[in-house]
Length: 297
Image 1: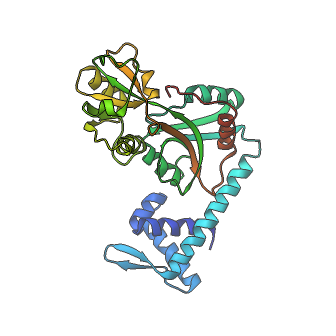
Image 2: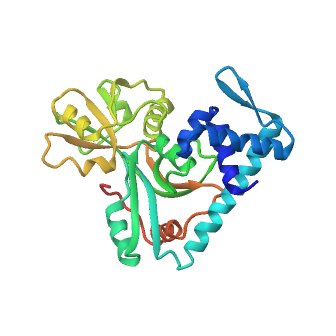
Image 3: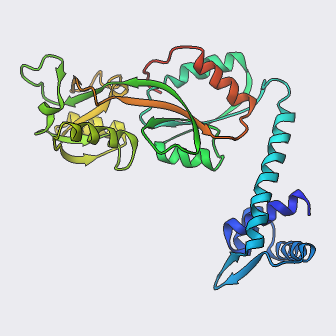
């Protein structure tokens, strides 16, 4: 067997259909079926069995799949490392950025471009949980996400923590510029995130820690729309400090929430125990070489 056949087998196992695997590999179905048969004949064992419309992997197939994953990863890493012997002066920076990012990414990218002018960029913005999937599937090498999340499979560098603010269309009498969670429990609140994600979880846990039940009327991860709803009086909202930079020109009042349980943490993740390109390593070094402050990435 060669590395090409191992890649074929990985696709067959993951797609569970010869037709789907052939489509993924951009080849026709008969040659792929022939390659699978040749591998089984060479090894003297059945690797997959048909179960209805899908293929089931045998115990022998499962063992081969594990070795195939290791060998193809080593091959990819070897090719990548050899190509990047020029200290990462060329290559691609594949990075994800959370919808509510507090990192001044444009400024960092300008600095990085000055240092490495021949690097190209692939930048995706999405929810933190989706960015984790993209890093896990190696679509992205790095991602800037909101914590907390389950991150056992990732290496994490803590970047920044920031306070939350209460924003509303009407000024709050006698509040000064600060409020507490207890002050907010009767307001109709919108959260800038959806259930199961870091910001959503952080806000609800802060209320729970004080045995308070917030009046949640909406979830909206589209920040421009959320601000429009607040400005129109549809409801008030709790947002990270990052969002405050988008308030000028809007009829919105902002008050910092004073609560030790409520802060928004941001982290940079990469896949644990996986080779990072020299380009990605250089970007990490740049981020760690300077203080990170809230911005409007």
